[in-house]
Image (cartoon, rainbow over all chains, first blue to last red; front, side):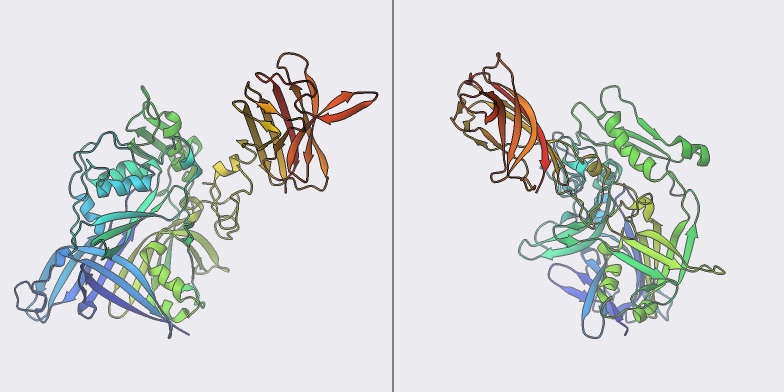
Amino acid sequence: MTVTSTWQVEFLDASTTTDLTSNVLGFSIHQNVQIGRFATFGGYMHLDNTGNIFTPSGGGTYQAFTWFNKIVRMTCDINDGSTTSTADVAYMVVTDMDFKDDGNYATVMLTLADCYTYAGRDAVTALDVSAAFGELDAVAQDMVNGVPSGVDAVPFPKFGATNATVSAFSKLNNVDPAETATYPIGYTGIIQEFEDGTARDYISHQILPSGPAVAFPTTATYDSSSAKWTLNAAYINRLLTKETVSSTDHYRSYEMTGDKTADKFPLKNVSTQYNTVDTINQAQIQAQIPASGSNATFVNDTDSQDTLGIRSVTYNKVIPVVVGGATDTEKAFIGNFWVKRFPTVHFTAQTATLSMSAIDEQMDSSSRQNYADFLSVQTCLFSHAKITFTATGASSAKTYQSVITGRMIHVSPNDTTITLRLATSDDNQSIKLDNTDIGLLDTNRLG
Amino acid sequence: MANPFDFSSGAVLTAAQLNQIGDYESWTPTLTNITLGSGTVNAHYAQVNEFVHFEIEFLSASDTSFSSTSMQFSMPVNYGGALNFVGLGNGWVRPDGTGTIYPIQVIGVQSSNNIVPYYMQNFTSVQVISVRESLPETWIKSNGVLYMAGSYRAA
């Protein structure tokens, strides 16, 4: 049994959905996630303009289309013959349009960005200096929404709605025990002052590094009762492993194989690496409000440095809340995350490329939803991937336990290729009890 | 960390959780035959699976009142053993706050899941009797002291 996969490209505002799938010649999107930094997504889409339908004031159907006030929704339906699962692959906005016409063939190229691109445009001003925020996801959300009063909300387009667009960050794993302390280290922030910057700057440079934590844009939803759009984002705290939150299990594991195997994702090619790109053996951390006389805190793994040389990360304005200012203890808690997790070099899968036409052949009704989850942005990124293949000339297969830290999806009328960016799950997940892949003592990290 | 641990299949395990195994936490025992008033009870316990260890400090105050029957403190976690009356540990009591210190045996009552202090009473032969309003001597309410510690098998 196989499944069929069907793409839809729709342009949404509050009142209408415009399906332009039949006009799409192809598109590419890239969605990459990084620890301690708010992810940015981008992409390009080519539309067939041979009929001149998109040219502004060209007399065509879409001559007055409000491209910059729409949300571009890219979904993929996975149908097993009787049931369809829909994957929310990407929600983007148009940032640029380029019309090309060679006299014979006319196209429009749209440049796409994630919906939070607007949070990176205007500086946040007029911050209430006494504002106290919640956990890091709440700090980030409040920063975008302009809460409490005194903070300027990011001026998103309303996308045809009556009321202003807002942001919502959702937790994909549970509160770390450190968050329950009276003054949790790295999880609650009081930003008493800002230098000039955008909301996105603060999220990427101060808020997420204070966990550190992971956050990335996901979907956009319109609520007619409140007459506003909500731009959704996913938040994963420093434990990194997705969990069941409010009865919804966010953890996913995708098994990919070099051979064609039913219900598993067949690999087209895999790149493995053995280098120091992901190695960190020194962290330099300074808080925005350090304790009196507390200079930047250095955390070092000298054994790793002696072997590999120094590879460091630096954060200058983290926001751990400690009465009297952050001491070395609080700052070292953040620095230890990096140095304890990433001091060693792993031979690991770096990228994996898959073809959807090949995946379609291996999936059936039992794996339909898992396939859709793999395509959906929230359930794909920072999920576990188990990569198994036999290297050319090798006598047996080898398995790499990985985490999907990014993907590039290239869609054409003929086929869709997905190139995953991978990192080792040994470092990028925390131990999950009874899990055969990331529940291994002496291999996986305690959170 | 209270039992049962947060260790269920699929949970993400943290170093903080492991470090909390056996950590003491406070509980407020229900008192029987004592009206605490402004007296104080400081009670802490730790549990590792079925093993429970507890400590109770009882300090009476001027408005604390007692009964002519056994003073009792509820257990932090129900008793899970098979004995009707189980020896939990020991302690000491000083009903007048400054005078004689009496060693006590701490007994657990299966039927009520209560902790009951007993002291050795010397009649013609040694016998034990539970601590109460007038035993081992009349409580001077403003500064009477009772300390108990013990361990038992949890349900």
